[in-house]
Each structure stands twice: as C-alpha cells, then as structure tokens.
Image 1 (cartoon, protein in one colour):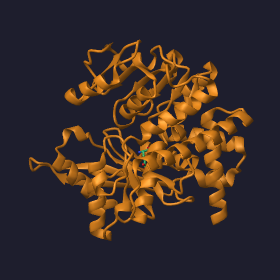
Image 2 (cartoon, protein in one colour; image 1 turned 90 degrees about the vertical axis):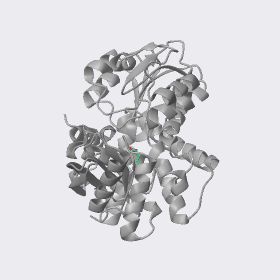
Image 3 (tube, protein in one colour; image 1 turned 180 degrees about the vertical axis):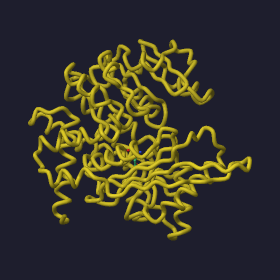
Length: 409
Ligand code: GLU
C-alpha cells in the first residue's frame, strides 16, 4: 500500500461508518491541486543540480491550506499527497480555520551547504509563490526544515508580494515567529499523554516512555515528559540509540547530543537499534521520526500498551489492525501531533494582528485546544465504540463535510 492509499484507507473507513454518501466522499477524497516543479540551482562548485519540488493542496473548505515542507530523499508526489490530506483532517480535528496542504523537495539536505540550501529554498519559492500566501496556503517546517528555511521563504515571497510574515509559520522568534512554536509538537504530545493518563489510569509520572526520533518532535517530547515525571527508557536518532530500563538522565542526554550531534554513544545507557527501541519494554511508545516504521510484523512485537503518533503516519494500516486486535491503544497522528500546527495557527494570528503573545499565553491556549480535541475524539470513541483513529477521522470528516456543503458544491 502506498502512503496515499494508506491515508485514503483511513478516510474511507470513517466515511463509510458515517455514511456521508458517495457524492461527499468523492469530493473530500480528491486533492484540489498537485504541483510538481523542477528546482535547478548552481552548487558551490559551479555544477548545476535539479531537484523535484512538490506542493499538494488538498482541501480549502475550512480556510487557507496549511502544512509543512519537508526536505528528504524520499519525498515524492504520492507521499506529499498523503501528508496533505492528513493536514486537512488534522486541522479539522483541532478545529483550526484551515484546510490542508503539504510540500517538499526530494533532496538530502545534509549533502548541501547552507548557501546551497538557501538558493534551493528561494528557487522553490519562485516557483510556488503564486499558489501560496497568507489567505491561500501557508507552509511551515516539517522533516529537515527549520526556522531559518522559513525565514528565507518569508523573505523571498515578500519580494513578490510585499512584506508578508503570515505567508509561512515556524519562523525564528526574531523574525515574526511565535514563542513556543519549536517545542509545540512535543508539548502537544505531553498534553495528550496527560489526557490519556486520566482516561486509562496511567499517570505520566512514573510511566515508561520509549521515543523513536530525537529531532524537533522527539527531543522536546523527551524533555517535557521527563520534566512531568515520566521515565524515558529509550531514545534514538538517525545515527543510533540508547536505552536504560531504569530511565535515562535526560538533561545529561541533551548535553551529550548537543556536543556530539547525536544521542548515540551516550554513556548513561546501552546502545539500542531502531527495531529494538520500537519493541522494547515500555508503557508508551512515541514514534517521532519517519512514516511507515511500524509495520505488521513490528506491531506484533510491540510491548507498549499505548502508541502515541508523534510522526505523521508511523503505523501502516496493517500495523494499525494488529494493534487493534492486540488491544494496544493508538493515538493517531492527526490528534497526537497536532500541537505543531496549532501553534503555527497562533503564529499566523499574531502576524495578521501585528501582536506578540508571551509563552504562557501560547501554552495555555495550546493546552485548551488539545484538550478539547482529545475530549471530542474520545467521546466519539466511547459512544460509537470506535478506535481513536477512526473517531478522529469521523470528527474531521464531519467538520470538513459540513463546511463543503454549506459553501455549495
Ligand atoms: N509539519 C507539521 C505537521 O505535520 C506542522 C505543520 C504546520 O505547522 O503547518 O503537522
């Protein structure tokens, strides 16, 4: 099953349960626009290289489309479409006034210099500047993109359209970014973990978490969960991992990662491979790296009771079924990792209103929206006896469907 087929599978499953009808189902399934561009740049050595860039705009019934940009060798049209539709459902689950989009460039950014990355980003903006904008489609960070990349996007877009901070979110604090945006996805995961804790009687304090990925999502989740009394028993990143059944010393792990660029080799535990991490003895597993890591066979071996999807689409639909059969509670990406886009929304609001919120306001509002979303999804799950993922889709499809019908087909 391709990524787009996997998302379509979840969508269809929920749409059929809701009985939305073939007309609405057809309307909601198809993306609005799929753009592919060739981004050619001059490398520092004078060579010309061409990269494929994508922006897929899935649905705009509830507002301007929103979603990140990823720079990764596996970016392609299919994955971008799948991630764009996830954004439509994610923004609807949290009730943000947005639709969904996603984009990216098929590139390994670790092989490029900062100047080359800047040229690539600006060239890409040149090619999509007429389809993005503060009231059309607002990009943001995703895998391997960061506040600096967002700053280049804002600057390049503004050359065409005048000063436009609200065209992109996840910008540096010193250039119209929002306080709390960097940690937002990890913080949202903590808030959802707290809600789950209340429901299943497993308080964060003393609960054992394994986190796959130590990037923007995993590292902040590890720090905040640790501060909340959770025990981090394993973490990894692209270079390697570390485990300690008694709990890792998280501040010392951060020091090590800062110095060496990786959690690998941290002496407060023993080495830990990816599969070992995913199947280690823990209560909550947070896959917070790439999609598709939890396959059917890995899912059968997972020992966690709860899977909190920090990444987008970390479970394949086959794995999802295994978890359902085994009674493992899966908190879906479109709910669990929605903290990032929620604070992106706060950033956009601040930019449009020319105001700055303090961090307390950001975290208070984030907690409120995440809790409301969780309560709604959990309520559908309880009353209709559905898994959380299907329940989240039911909530989202209901909202997007209603907006679509009200606007007129
Ligand atoms: N890339 C993030 C996501 O998948 C954030 C998107 C945004 O902030 O617009 O949710």
